[in-house]
Length: 320
Image (tube, rainbow, N blue to C red; front, side, top):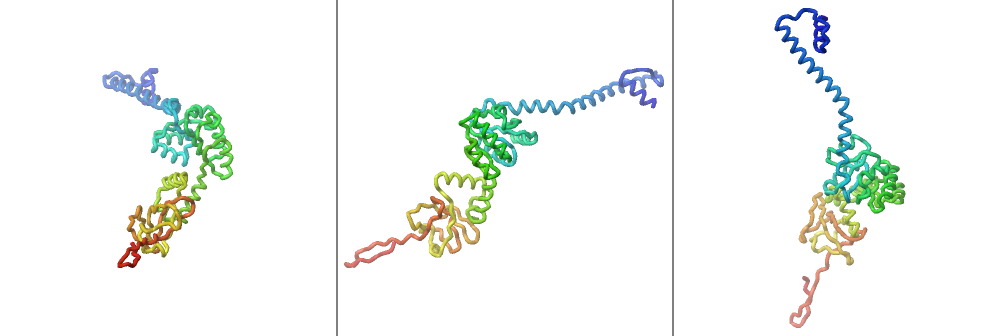
Protein backbone atom coordinates (compact mmCIF):
# COMPACT_ATOMS: atom_id res chain seq x y z
CA UNK A 1 0.00 0.00 0.00
CA UNK A 2 2.91 2.37 0.68
CA UNK A 3 4.21 1.77 -2.85
CA UNK A 4 0.80 2.35 -4.46
CA UNK A 5 0.30 5.50 -2.41
CA UNK A 6 3.73 6.87 -3.36
CA UNK A 7 3.25 6.15 -7.09
CA UNK A 8 -0.19 7.81 -7.12
CA UNK A 9 0.82 11.06 -5.37
CA UNK A 10 3.97 11.23 -7.50
CA UNK A 11 2.31 10.73 -10.92
CA UNK A 12 -0.52 13.16 -10.26
CA UNK A 13 1.72 15.70 -8.51
CA UNK A 14 -0.29 15.93 -5.31
CA UNK A 15 2.71 15.65 -3.06
CA UNK A 16 1.15 15.20 0.38
CA UNK A 17 4.41 13.78 1.64
CA UNK A 18 6.70 10.83 1.31
CA UNK A 19 6.31 7.60 3.17
CA UNK A 20 10.06 7.19 3.21
CA UNK A 21 12.48 10.07 2.61
CA UNK A 22 13.96 10.20 -0.90
CA UNK A 23 17.46 11.44 -0.28
CA UNK A 24 19.82 9.41 -2.46
CA UNK A 25 20.42 10.37 -6.15
CA UNK A 26 19.27 6.92 -7.29
CA UNK A 27 15.87 7.26 -5.64
CA UNK A 28 15.41 10.78 -6.97
CA UNK A 29 16.31 9.68 -10.51
CA UNK A 30 13.83 6.86 -10.22
CA UNK A 31 11.15 9.31 -9.08
CA UNK A 32 11.86 11.64 -12.04
CA UNK A 33 11.57 8.77 -14.52
CA UNK A 34 8.37 7.60 -12.86
CA UNK A 35 6.84 11.07 -13.21
CA UNK A 36 7.83 11.43 -16.89
CA UNK A 37 6.68 7.97 -18.00
CA UNK A 38 3.63 8.12 -15.75
CA UNK A 39 2.38 11.35 -17.30
CA UNK A 40 3.11 10.02 -20.79
CA UNK A 41 1.13 6.87 -20.12
CA UNK A 42 -1.75 8.84 -18.64
CA UNK A 43 -1.89 11.17 -21.65
CA UNK A 44 -1.70 8.25 -24.12
CA UNK A 45 -4.46 6.33 -22.34
CA UNK A 46 -6.70 9.38 -22.06
CA UNK A 47 -6.16 10.25 -25.73
CA UNK A 48 -7.07 6.70 -26.76
CA UNK A 49 -10.33 6.87 -24.86
CA UNK A 50 -11.22 10.23 -26.39
CA UNK A 51 -10.36 8.91 -29.85
CA UNK A 52 -12.62 5.89 -29.43
CA UNK A 53 -15.50 8.13 -28.42
CA UNK A 54 -15.00 10.72 -31.12
CA UNK A 55 -13.81 8.55 -34.00
CA UNK A 56 -17.29 7.50 -35.10
CA UNK A 57 -18.64 11.03 -35.33
CA UNK A 58 -15.54 12.39 -37.02
CA UNK A 59 -15.44 9.61 -39.59
CA UNK A 60 -19.14 10.04 -40.30
CA UNK A 61 -18.67 13.74 -40.94
CA UNK A 62 -15.65 13.11 -43.16
CA UNK A 63 -17.44 10.34 -45.05
CA UNK A 64 -20.50 12.52 -45.66
CA UNK A 65 -18.33 15.19 -47.21
CA UNK A 66 -16.43 12.63 -49.25
CA UNK A 67 -19.52 10.72 -50.40
CA UNK A 68 -21.27 13.79 -51.78
CA UNK A 69 -18.17 15.36 -53.30
CA UNK A 70 -18.49 15.65 -57.07
CA UNK A 71 -22.21 14.93 -57.43
CA UNK A 72 -22.98 18.55 -58.31
CA UNK A 73 -20.74 18.35 -61.39
CA UNK A 74 -22.39 15.20 -62.83
CA UNK A 75 -24.42 15.48 -66.05
CA UNK A 76 -26.27 12.78 -68.01
CA UNK A 77 -25.46 10.29 -65.27
CA UNK A 78 -27.40 7.36 -63.81
CA UNK A 79 -28.96 7.16 -60.36
CA UNK A 80 -29.17 3.73 -58.72
CA UNK A 81 -31.67 3.57 -55.85
CA UNK A 82 -30.77 0.60 -53.67
CA UNK A 83 -27.49 -1.29 -53.32
CA UNK A 84 -28.68 -4.83 -52.70
CA UNK A 85 -27.94 -7.87 -54.84
CA UNK A 86 -29.57 -6.41 -57.94
CA UNK A 87 -28.06 -2.98 -57.33
CA UNK A 88 -24.53 -4.32 -56.96
CA UNK A 89 -24.81 -6.24 -60.24
CA UNK A 90 -26.15 -3.14 -61.95
CA UNK A 91 -23.30 -1.04 -60.56
CA UNK A 92 -20.67 -3.48 -61.86
CA UNK A 93 -22.12 -3.27 -65.36
CA UNK A 94 -22.27 0.52 -65.23
CA UNK A 95 -18.64 0.64 -64.16
CA UNK A 96 -17.67 -1.70 -66.99
CA UNK A 97 -19.52 0.53 -69.46
CA UNK A 98 -17.93 3.70 -68.08
CA UNK A 99 -21.29 5.28 -67.25
CA UNK A 100 -21.15 7.81 -64.37
CA UNK A 101 -23.64 7.07 -61.62
CA UNK A 102 -24.67 7.76 -58.02
CA UNK A 103 -25.84 5.12 -55.54
CA UNK A 104 -28.56 6.05 -53.03
CA UNK A 105 -29.21 3.91 -49.97
CA UNK A 106 -30.01 4.31 -46.28
CA UNK A 107 -27.93 1.40 -44.98
CA UNK A 108 -24.43 2.33 -43.74
CA UNK A 109 -23.03 -1.14 -44.43
CA UNK A 110 -24.28 -1.14 -48.01
CA UNK A 111 -22.89 2.33 -48.59
CA UNK A 112 -19.54 1.21 -47.20
CA UNK A 113 -19.55 -1.74 -49.60
CA UNK A 114 -20.39 0.62 -52.47
CA UNK A 115 -17.55 2.93 -51.48
CA UNK A 116 -15.15 0.01 -51.49
CA UNK A 117 -16.14 -0.45 -55.13
CA UNK A 118 -15.18 3.21 -55.69
CA UNK A 119 -18.78 4.31 -56.18
CA UNK A 120 -20.10 7.80 -55.59
CA UNK A 121 -22.79 7.31 -52.94
CA UNK A 122 -25.43 9.33 -51.14
CA UNK A 123 -27.14 8.34 -47.90
CA UNK A 124 -30.85 8.99 -47.68
CA UNK A 125 -34.37 7.93 -48.60
CA UNK A 126 -34.78 8.05 -52.37
CA UNK A 127 -38.53 8.70 -52.04
CA UNK A 128 -37.78 12.20 -50.72
CA UNK A 129 -37.40 15.11 -53.10
CA UNK A 130 -34.32 16.54 -51.37
CA UNK A 131 -32.39 13.30 -51.69
CA UNK A 132 -33.09 12.91 -55.40
CA UNK A 133 -32.24 16.57 -55.99
CA UNK A 134 -28.98 16.09 -54.11
CA UNK A 135 -28.23 13.15 -56.41
CA UNK A 136 -28.76 15.42 -59.43
CA UNK A 137 -31.97 13.90 -60.75
CA UNK A 138 -32.67 17.10 -62.68
CA UNK A 139 -29.51 16.46 -64.73
CA UNK A 140 -29.63 12.63 -64.85
CA UNK A 141 -30.34 10.68 -68.02
CA UNK A 142 -31.62 7.53 -66.32
CA UNK A 143 -32.81 6.44 -62.88
CA UNK A 144 -32.97 2.80 -61.82
CA UNK A 145 -34.89 1.89 -58.69
CA UNK A 146 -34.01 -1.68 -57.72
CA UNK A 147 -35.34 -1.90 -54.17
CA UNK A 148 -37.06 -5.17 -53.16
CA UNK A 149 -40.07 -3.12 -51.94
CA UNK A 150 -42.56 -2.50 -54.75
CA UNK A 151 -44.26 0.34 -52.87
CA UNK A 152 -40.96 2.17 -52.44
CA UNK A 153 -40.20 1.72 -56.15
CA UNK A 154 -43.59 3.23 -57.03
CA UNK A 155 -43.00 6.26 -54.78
CA UNK A 156 -39.50 6.78 -56.17
CA UNK A 157 -40.85 6.57 -59.72
CA UNK A 158 -43.55 9.15 -58.99
CA UNK A 159 -41.09 11.52 -57.31
CA UNK A 160 -38.45 11.23 -60.02
CA UNK A 161 -40.99 11.73 -62.82
CA UNK A 162 -42.22 14.97 -61.22
CA UNK A 163 -38.71 16.31 -60.65
CA UNK A 164 -37.50 15.41 -64.16
CA UNK A 165 -40.16 14.62 -66.79
CA UNK A 166 -37.46 13.67 -69.33
CA UNK A 167 -35.49 11.15 -67.27
CA UNK A 168 -35.66 7.49 -68.26
CA UNK A 169 -36.88 5.42 -65.31
CA UNK A 170 -36.19 1.69 -65.00
CA UNK A 171 -38.08 0.12 -62.11
CA UNK A 172 -37.92 -3.28 -60.47
CA UNK A 173 -41.14 -5.19 -59.80
CA UNK A 174 -41.27 -8.14 -57.43
CA UNK A 175 -44.94 -8.92 -58.17
CA UNK A 176 -46.36 -9.01 -61.71
CA UNK A 177 -49.35 -6.89 -60.64
CA UNK A 178 -47.01 -4.01 -59.78
CA UNK A 179 -45.83 -3.63 -63.37
CA UNK A 180 -48.92 -1.71 -64.49
CA UNK A 181 -48.75 0.56 -61.45
CA UNK A 182 -45.13 1.40 -62.15
CA UNK A 183 -45.89 2.16 -65.78
CA UNK A 184 -48.78 4.40 -64.77
CA UNK A 185 -46.51 6.10 -62.25
CA UNK A 186 -44.12 7.12 -65.00
CA UNK A 187 -41.67 4.22 -65.35
CA UNK A 188 -40.18 3.84 -68.81
CA UNK A 189 -39.30 0.17 -68.38
CA UNK A 190 -40.23 -2.39 -65.73
CA UNK A 191 -38.01 -5.39 -64.97
CA UNK A 192 -39.28 -8.38 -63.01
CA UNK A 193 -36.50 -10.66 -61.68
CA UNK A 194 -38.98 -13.49 -61.15
CA UNK A 195 -40.11 -13.39 -64.79
CA UNK A 196 -36.55 -13.23 -66.08
CA UNK A 197 -35.50 -16.11 -63.84
CA UNK A 198 -38.43 -18.24 -64.97
CA UNK A 199 -37.68 -17.62 -68.62
CA UNK A 200 -34.03 -18.42 -68.03
CA UNK A 201 -34.83 -21.78 -66.45
CA UNK A 202 -37.31 -22.57 -69.22
CA UNK A 203 -34.62 -21.87 -71.82
CA UNK A 204 -32.21 -24.18 -70.01
CA UNK A 205 -34.83 -26.94 -70.11
CA UNK A 206 -36.15 -26.50 -73.65
CA UNK A 207 -33.09 -25.13 -75.47
CA UNK A 208 -29.99 -26.58 -73.83
CA UNK A 209 -27.71 -26.28 -76.86
CA UNK A 210 -28.58 -22.63 -77.38
CA UNK A 211 -27.88 -21.94 -73.72
CA UNK A 212 -24.53 -23.74 -73.89
CA UNK A 213 -23.60 -21.59 -76.85
CA UNK A 214 -24.60 -18.45 -74.97
CA UNK A 215 -23.48 -19.56 -71.53
CA UNK A 216 -23.12 -16.14 -69.94
CA UNK A 217 -26.56 -15.26 -68.51
CA UNK A 218 -26.02 -11.51 -68.64
CA UNK A 219 -24.74 -11.51 -72.23
CA UNK A 220 -27.46 -13.96 -73.28
CA UNK A 221 -30.23 -11.79 -71.85
CA UNK A 222 -28.75 -8.68 -73.41
CA UNK A 223 -28.28 -10.39 -76.78
CA UNK A 224 -31.81 -11.74 -76.82
CA UNK A 225 -33.20 -8.32 -75.99
CA UNK A 226 -31.15 -6.57 -78.67
CA UNK A 227 -32.09 -9.15 -81.29
CA UNK A 228 -35.77 -8.86 -80.47
CA UNK A 229 -35.61 -5.13 -81.09
CA UNK A 230 -34.86 -5.80 -84.76
CA UNK A 231 -37.18 -8.80 -85.08
CA UNK A 232 -34.56 -11.56 -84.82
CA UNK A 233 -34.65 -14.70 -82.71
CA UNK A 234 -32.29 -17.57 -81.99
CA UNK A 235 -33.85 -21.00 -82.66
CA UNK A 236 -32.77 -24.59 -82.27
CA UNK A 237 -33.65 -26.90 -85.18
CA UNK A 238 -33.07 -30.65 -85.03
CA UNK A 239 -31.29 -32.24 -87.98
CA UNK A 240 -33.85 -34.49 -89.65
CA UNK A 241 -33.14 -37.52 -91.80
CA UNK A 242 -33.60 -35.26 -94.80
CA UNK A 243 -30.76 -32.96 -93.69
CA UNK A 244 -28.46 -35.69 -92.39
CA UNK A 245 -25.55 -36.51 -94.65
CA UNK A 246 -25.52 -33.06 -96.27
CA UNK A 247 -23.10 -30.18 -95.66
CA UNK A 248 -24.18 -26.91 -94.06
CA UNK A 249 -23.83 -25.15 -97.40
CA UNK A 250 -26.64 -27.25 -98.88
CA UNK A 251 -29.19 -26.25 -96.23
CA UNK A 252 -31.93 -23.84 -97.27
CA UNK A 253 -35.46 -22.88 -96.25
CA UNK A 254 -38.64 -24.30 -97.70
CA UNK A 255 -39.92 -20.74 -98.17
CA UNK A 256 -38.23 -17.43 -98.80
CA UNK A 257 -37.03 -17.28 -95.20
CA UNK A 258 -33.63 -15.70 -94.55
CA UNK A 259 -31.63 -17.39 -91.80
CA UNK A 260 -28.09 -17.86 -90.53
CA UNK A 261 -26.66 -21.06 -89.06
CA UNK A 262 -24.74 -19.90 -86.00
CA UNK A 263 -23.57 -23.25 -84.65
CA UNK A 264 -23.96 -27.01 -84.92
CA UNK A 265 -24.73 -28.97 -81.74
CA UNK A 266 -23.36 -32.47 -82.12
CA UNK A 267 -25.16 -35.42 -80.62
CA UNK A 268 -22.15 -36.07 -78.38
CA UNK A 269 -22.48 -32.58 -76.88
CA UNK A 270 -19.77 -30.74 -78.81
CA UNK A 271 -20.70 -27.34 -80.21
CA UNK A 272 -19.16 -26.14 -83.49
CA UNK A 273 -19.56 -22.37 -83.68
CA UNK A 274 -19.62 -20.70 -87.10
CA UNK A 275 -19.46 -23.99 -89.02
CA UNK A 276 -17.86 -24.15 -92.44
CA UNK A 277 -19.97 -24.70 -95.54
CA UNK A 278 -18.58 -28.21 -95.94
CA UNK A 279 -19.41 -29.18 -92.35
CA UNK A 280 -21.34 -32.42 -92.65
CA UNK A 281 -24.53 -32.88 -90.65
CA UNK A 282 -25.49 -36.13 -88.96
CA UNK A 283 -28.70 -37.52 -87.54
CA UNK A 284 -29.15 -36.43 -83.93
CA UNK A 285 -27.38 -33.11 -84.43
CA UNK A 286 -29.08 -29.76 -83.92
CA UNK A 287 -28.65 -26.40 -85.63
CA UNK A 288 -28.59 -23.10 -83.77
CA UNK A 289 -30.19 -20.74 -86.26
CA UNK A 290 -30.67 -16.97 -86.29
CA UNK A 291 -33.84 -15.96 -88.13
CA UNK A 292 -36.72 -13.52 -88.17
CA UNK A 293 -39.93 -14.21 -86.29
CA UNK A 294 -40.76 -16.36 -83.31
CA UNK A 295 -41.20 -19.56 -85.36
CA UNK A 296 -38.07 -21.50 -86.40
CA UNK A 297 -37.47 -21.75 -90.17
CA UNK A 298 -38.43 -24.94 -92.02
CA UNK A 299 -35.12 -26.24 -93.35
CA UNK A 300 -34.53 -28.50 -96.32
CA UNK A 301 -31.77 -29.38 -98.77
CA UNK A 302 -31.09 -27.26 -101.83
CA UNK A 303 -32.21 -29.02 -104.99
CA UNK A 304 -29.35 -29.79 -107.30
CA UNK A 305 -29.42 -27.53 -110.33
CA UNK A 306 -29.32 -29.11 -113.73
CA UNK A 307 -28.61 -27.87 -117.22
CA UNK A 308 -29.15 -29.30 -120.63
CA UNK A 309 -26.45 -29.73 -123.23
CA UNK A 310 -26.84 -30.70 -126.87
CA UNK A 311 -24.91 -33.86 -127.72
CA UNK A 312 -25.19 -35.23 -131.30
CA UNK A 313 -28.60 -33.67 -131.69
CA UNK A 314 -30.00 -34.91 -128.37
CA UNK A 315 -30.57 -32.88 -125.20
CA UNK A 316 -29.02 -34.41 -122.07
CA UNK A 317 -29.74 -33.17 -118.50
CA UNK A 318 -26.59 -32.82 -116.44
CA UNK A 319 -26.72 -32.30 -112.67
CA UNK A 320 -24.31 -29.73 -111.30
